[in-house]
Amino acid sequence: MALPTRHMPNILLVVADDHRQDCLHGDRVTGPATPTLDSLAAQGTECTGARIMGGDSQAVCVPSRAALLTGCGSRRALANPLSADFCERQRINPNCRTLGEVLGAAGYRTHVVGKWHNDPGTLNRSFNSGEALFLGGMGAHEAPRLHRYDARGNYAPEAAVRTPGFSSELFAEAAIRFIEKAKPGQAPFFLYCAFTSPHDPRTPPADFRARYRDRDLILPENFLARHPFDNGELAVRDEKLAPLPRDPATIRRHRGDYYGMIEHHDHQLGRMLAALEHAGLLEETLIAYVSDHGLALGSHGLLGKQNLYEHSLRVPLIMKGPGIPDGRLVSQDVYAHRLFATLCELAGVSVPETVEVSSLMPLLKGGEKAVADTPLHFAHYFDRQRMVKDERWKLIQYRVNGGRREQLFDLRNDPHELRDLASEPAMQTHLTRLATALRNGPPGLTSW
Image (cartoon, rainbow, N blue to C red):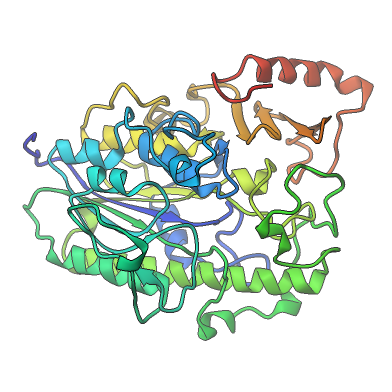
């Protein structure tokens, strides 16, 4: 194991579950209040164009979290993403080194708290300790069934223990216990804390839910009663959480629950930062906040994340700490899994050859004109939907029940994707160009 050097910062990486990018900095009418994240963004850098690549699972968090943990695209990050066995589909590619694995080899103390929705074997090769582990996709937030970290990798379902308390509070308290044991001058730590919030069942504590009055909440501009066509995933569990046609009052209630969950876990993050400050570690800790994907929640008549619209692909990405510019706002599109190489660069750790995308630091330091790793960004959902976009234009292709369909959006003039331009003659040049880019896109993106 390499010896740590004095300049290596502590790292706190916080991953939310289902937090869409535009649900930040709200006023409890247009969106949730997030004072902790607001402060982090004001004192650090916020990337408003961060996005995921989708995946081959209705639980999009599986491939998305694998991408964050490996720095690879959502298909390469997993060992067998198209397997008929769901447990096998969760397994991270053993040929890809994980962030915890790389930092641990460089001298970091690696600790995991909260949700883990990939294989247990990768959990143990990535972290040498942990607490309050939730293995799986979703569950009750009140008294969740949690695992202890097991050095032997025994995370059988029957080993989980129902734990009194609320999920976000339990995870924050476990993280705080780890922070309180850290001392200045020790080897640096990598603390990975993954919330299950704001994933459903959305049951925020009553005092946080009471801050949102349903009748005051403003629906998104792209609210629809129904999705206009079959996108291949209209009957998934997520879409059955509210009846059709979508009723504005019902969607406002869902959003009130969602906003309350976000404000509550924002408060728990604040407690973690206060613990860092009390321990004298805040200034030497690099803090990053990201989500595994977004969520529709009424946009385009949808509720879930099994689609390729912006509300489901874009995620919050906020960083603060040593080496991060203060008060920077970066709007350029970036893959969220570039965070892997970014954290390695800030830690002074070599990026493994398995990582597919570059560090964000040139962009953060160089401003909006800095060269991105790619002028095009891709995403897919199984082989039913696939997407490519450049700085302005976005193409989504669908293959459902033997039929094919396309949507073309001008995101500069239509950021909410309300006007499909695919059938307009003047738009055929853009449509053809982007369709060609999809055919020549990342290897393994699609079998079309």
